[in-house]
Length: 197
Picture 1: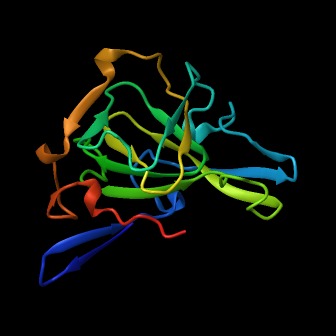
Picture 2: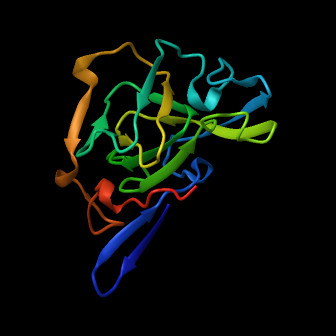
C-alpha cells in the first residue's frame, strides 16, 4: 500500500498493494497458483500442510460473492477475538483493508490495504494459458479488517474460519472511532484508489 497526500488540500489517497507485501504480525500470506487451460482452472485454496495459515485447523468454509461498488461493511471494521479468517479470492478482484489494533503486537497501528485477485471473469479465454498467482491471506484475531469491491465485476471470496460461526465473536467497530496514524484520520473507502486494470 502506498499513501499519497496533496499538501494543498490535505487529501489522502491509498493505492492497494500486492498481498505478498503484507507485514502485519501473523498475516503470513501463502502463495497459491491457478492451473488453467482451455477447459477452465484448478486452484488449491487451503491445505492441511499450510502451517503459516494453520491449515490443519479446519472448522468450516464459506463462499461470499460481492458485486461492484459494495462493501462488507461500508462504514465499519470486522473484528474477532477468537477466530482467524483465511481469505482467498477465487474470481475477480477484492480490496482487503487490515488494521492491527492488538495491544501487544509489534505491528500495532499498522494499516495495510491489499489488492487480492482471482481468475478473471471469462478465464481462461481472457487470461493466457498456464499459471496465475493468488494468495491465501490469514487474518489473526484482534486484527481489524473489511473488504470491498472497487472493480467492475463481482468477486468470489472463499473463507476458512478457524472456528464455527459464533455471533458473540463477530464484532464491528465503526471506522470513525479508530484513528489511523498513517492517514492522520479514520479509514474510509473513499480514500482507496480503484484499480485501473
